[in-house]
Amino acid sequence: MTAGTDGVRIDCAGPVATVTLCRPDVLNAQTPAMWRALREFSRDLPGDVRVVVVRGEGRAFSAGLDRAVVGTTGPGSFAELAGLPEAECADRIAEFQAAFTWLHRPDLISVAAVQGHAVGAGFQLALACDLRILAEDARLSMAEVTLGLVPDLAGTKRLVDLVGYARALEICVTGRRMDAAEADRLGLATLVVPPADLDDTVRDLTAGLLAHPRDAVVEIKALLAGASGRTPAQQQRAEREAQTRRLRDLTGSGE
Image (cartoon, rainbow, N blue to C red; front, side):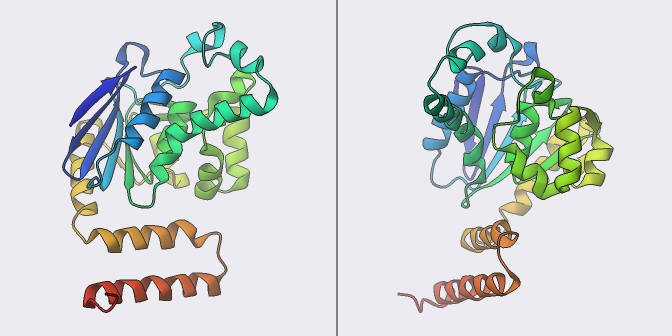
């Protein structure tokens, strides 16, 4: 299955779906139309998909919000959003967030393959993924503050979870750029590889993610994703309950 619209393409091959931002002429700058397309893709994803790879066509992952959106008066523009009632504006932003948060789904493992710039919305798209493979030329920045905005595409909690409050604050408030080596030191990168090795590394990682039973992988992701919000006793209980489900499933005792 291959589908594409509004600067985004999805290719499904068995258990792997590859989502590609395909506006290389503007470094895959993002628009509300692209976010709508991403939401639609998530709703139509085949049930056998287990891994989603997110990448950008050309020399950048994504340079962030398309600046053309800033200065227009069309759908999703600053002017259009600012003119909405407060609750309606918030609801519209929730729709934008849904283009990113579906990558958190417990039945999927999402992988960002990041080369070149991952700025603003591009950085948040990478953060939306469970794992991030960075080429050595990757440059990351939470640049919303430079436009007088806040990061609002579900990236702030992910960033705090990964690097801690103080470092996340510094990254977001300065809007500075960090290279792949620093991102690796801070825990933002799963792996850093030479640009020429990015595709092969993502392919090898994907194979590893698919090597074991889906139900076990889903349970493990749920255990780890919820761990920071649980007490040790609650986490231990979650482990016991998950293992009981696995044992019953494997032995047929739950039937």
